[in-house]
Image 1: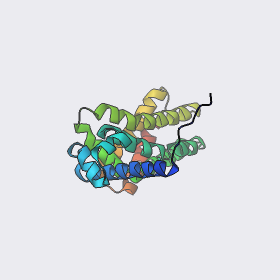
Image 2: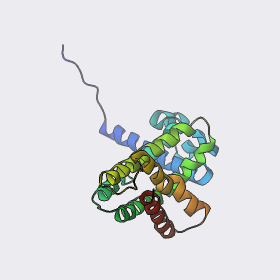
Image 3: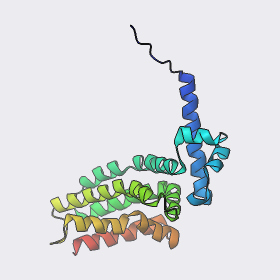
Image 4: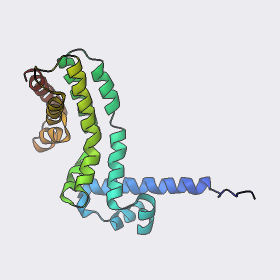
Length: 206
């Protein structure tokens, strides 16, 4: 007996994709304007022009939506391209200039989402998962940079790859950019230049 394949309407699929996009856009706008903790699924549904049950069916819970927004920005952060550029360098100063520019570009382009990420940290039910989602890939990239520097003999004597990666996170991690630009009011140009110089000193002097 032949098996009948379920019919999938391209029109309905397109409408579902549009609805999901509208929900994610609405959530991003609301999270950015009011902070993650203050926004409800009902708020997102109202902004997206749909029903609460549609939000859950299309995009999941509020935490699911936040994770999706972060995942999209992580994927489009340019980390892989920046790592490839760093691996093409041959001295510590050049490597840190390239890394500083790449991490600056990613943090600057995704500033809205990073604001949302930090605002979610007060919500204990999602904080750990969201922070892990937002930083795991980032830290892995910095560890790969540290490995490249070690393989090229560019680290200070006795400085391990793990410790070098920790110092790179200290200099170029999410908190570093946020502290200087958001909390202290530095420009991204000023922060890029200063963090680059600190990283060269911290990695080259042990």
